[in-house]
Length: 244
Image 1 (cartoon, rainbow, N blue to C red):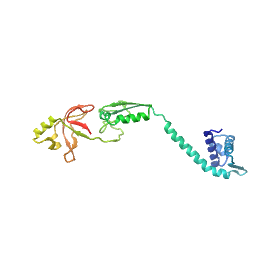
Image 2: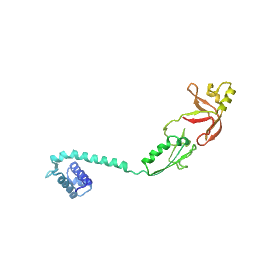
Image 3: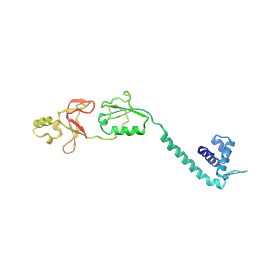
């Protein structure tokens, strides 16, 4: 019995003979001997029970059966190659270590679920996650990539925005009372500029640069805070509040 792979060889040989116009020319293209090519053609004819090629003094011509078979043969080969490509895509093994860094807030959000789905699809991959707000040099720290909030500190990196986060400012009641007494009006009726100089607890690396926040009318405005403490991770309780 002829195997499927052998049948494909026979069909490809028949197509080559038809395209090249003879067994000798087909043998040169296929890198096979003429007897081998002739034997393949005979095997295909025997298998199908029909003569496919007429051998005459003026060369070789397809019979009516051969002419009818040729387009079908081309389609069979095309489908077979397509199936091989599909199977190859699914049989490529993905394995190894993926080492990345991410901001701590991601560890408390969507990242665990995404990692679980990834590892279920690629069980041979091992993941090592480093949660930090201080990502300086991927190569030095041995990282494949990093998920960070804001612009990366390392220049020359290829970056892509994948989502946006919205943060709100919150303050301790005692701070609101103090600022209200100082300003002479309740804090919730003040413009953001009234917060200039207010004590601020922020992420590691924060400086004295103004911070853009949303004004009472929904417009972006800047406020200049006094950064009195910083945390490399989830911000501690203070004026900087919770992620929404």
